[in-house]
Amino acid sequence: MEPREALQHYFEHDAFRGPQEEVIQHVLAGRHALVIMPTGMGKSLCFQIPALVAPPGAQNDALTLVISPLIALMKDQVDGLRRRGIDATFINSSLTRSERERRYEAVSAGKHRLLYVTPERFRKPEFREVIAHRSVRLLAVDEAHCISEWGHDFRPDYTRLAEIREMLGHPTTIALTATATPEVQTDIIRQLGLTSPEVRLFHEGIDRPNLKLEVQEVFGDEEKLHAIEEIRDGESGSGIVYFTLIKTLMRFSDRLKESGIEHLVYHGDLPRDERRYLQDAFMRQPGKLVLATNAFGMGIDKEDIRFVIHADVPGSMESYYQEIGRAGRDGLPSLCLLLYDQSDLMTQMEFLAWSNPDAQFYERVYDFLQHEQEQIHAFGVDWLRERLHHKNKHDHRLETALAMLDRHGVISGSLAPLQVEVIHPLPETLQDPQHLNDKLKRDQQKLYTLVEYVNCTGDRKTFIHRYFGLAKEPTDDVPSKRPDA
Image (cartoon, rainbow, N blue to C red; front, side, top):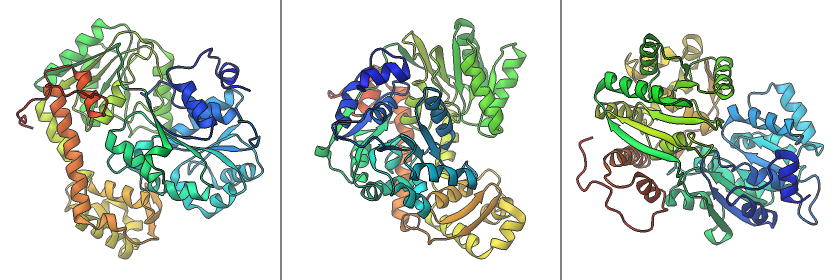
C-alpha cells in the first residue's frame, strides 16, 4: 500500500497537507527527521502513515514505537486509531498490572503496528525484555521539546533517548514538536545521539494568516471582564479564555453567570471523568465558551474556535503560541487576544519561584523522604509541607521537587497520596546551585520575552517568527528600553 492509499483508506483524506508527504517519504527511505509543525496541522500522520506502509524488503511485523509524555492523550489517540481499523495500543501506568502483562504478551508475540509508551517505561526491565523481541522500524518522539532543558516541559527520561535508540538497534527516528527555538532544535538532535547532517529539518513555520493577534492593556478584573463579554457578544463560534489560577477562573465564572453568559469551567483539580465530560461537551457542541487553565487544550482539535483569550500573561512564548494555535483550524478568521495587566506578572514570578527550587531545598526534601518515611506515610504531604515551608500554604516548591524526583527516578510510589520510597541517590543536576540558577534565569528570560511581545510596536507575527528562528532580517519591533516588569 502506498502512502496516499493508506491516507484514503484509513483516514479518508484525498491529499496530504503541507510537507506531510515529503516527511513520510523521507522516513520510509530510512532517513531521520525533525518536524516542527503547528498544533493541529497533522504531525501524527507523519509517523502513523509510515507505520502502515512497509518499505520494500521490510518486515511486515515491524513496530513503530511512539514515545510521548502525555499519558492522558495516549488512550484517546489509540482509541481513534483502532476505530479506523489500525492495530495500535499503549502501555503506561494507567493500566492495571494484569492489563500491562496482557499487552506485554501481545507485543512480544508480534501483535500491534503502533505502540505508544512514555520514556519512563524504559526503566522497567520487563518492558525492555518485551521490546527486545520486536524489530522497531521507526521510533517517533512526540512532544520532542521535552528532550531539552532549554525547552518547556523538560522530562529527564527524554535525555536517555540516545541510549534507548541504541537499545532498539538505531532505528529510523522522527522527532516532532509544535514549537522549538533554534537552540532547542540543536539540543533535540544532540540528545537523540545524532548530528545535524544526519537529520533533515522540516519546519512548517508558525504563520497562521487567519489568526489576528492583539494585545489589550487592562487594569483590574472589571476591564478584563468587559473585554471578555464584548468579544463573546460579537462572536458566534466557540471560544477559550485561559487563566493562570483556578481561584481567578472561578471568580470570573461567577461574574459571567451573573451576566447570563453560559460557559464551561475546566481545570486540573476536577475529577478525570468530569474533565473528559467537559472536553467532550466542548468538542461536540457548536458555539461553546470554556474558561480554563492550561490543563485544557491537549487533544483539542475543534475547527470552529473563533477566539482564544488570555486573561493572564502566560509563562512563555512556547505555551502562548501552542494555546493560540487552537484557534481557527478551519482557516476562517479568528482572534487571539492577550489581556495584559502588569500586576499579573507577579503571579508568574511566583510560579517561577515555585517551579525552580534551589539545591538546598531539594536536599531537605530528599533527607525527609529518606529519614522520616514513617511520619510522611502516616500524616501525608501536609505534614511534610509544614516542616519545609514553615506553614506557608502559598509555597508550592514541594510539588515541583516531588515531581522532579519522580521524573528522575529518585523515588518510587504514589505522589497522591504521598506514599513513596527513595530508590536512587539525588542526581547531580538537582544538587548543582549553578545549574539550577541558570535554569531559573532562562525561565525568567522566557517571561521577559512575553513582556517584550506585549510592548512590541511592529508586526507581532514577525516577533514570534524571530523568536523561533524563522525571521532572517532584523526588525525594530522590540522596545529599546526594558519595560518596568
